[in-house]
Length: 141
Image (cartoon, rainbow, N blue to C red; front, side, top):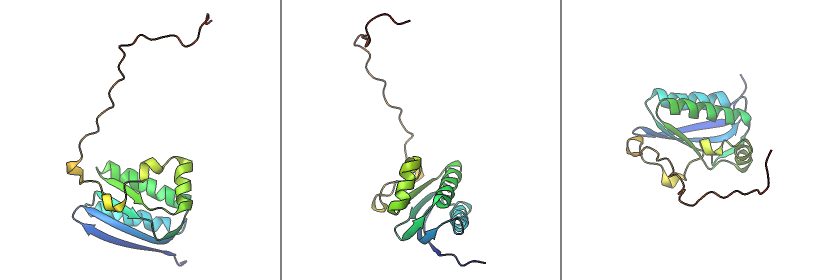
């Protein structure tokens, strides 16, 4: 069995866990990430913060592992957020548009427990008291 270059450290606080990953997340180590995040759910953890500060490399295998774990966590009524991704992985998140799904506030500003989170409020509709004005002039066929 090949030697993995990833360490996983988990610290629990009630229904919340901080997982610190250090090393490389690739095709070989991504299953370890999936297993560690799945273990949080099976242990009743519903808020998972993943600190990526010590990660030196993360490819699309890691992205898939995080997206899979985030979906499973959401289905269980929880939330998974990545913090401090390395620059190269940040580019992958930007390029794929997945950053909005996985990135959260800095570790010093952790979101409240799920019991304290209000339901999202839909944005108000714009005021339509002003008459609509045609932008194009002429006949449209």
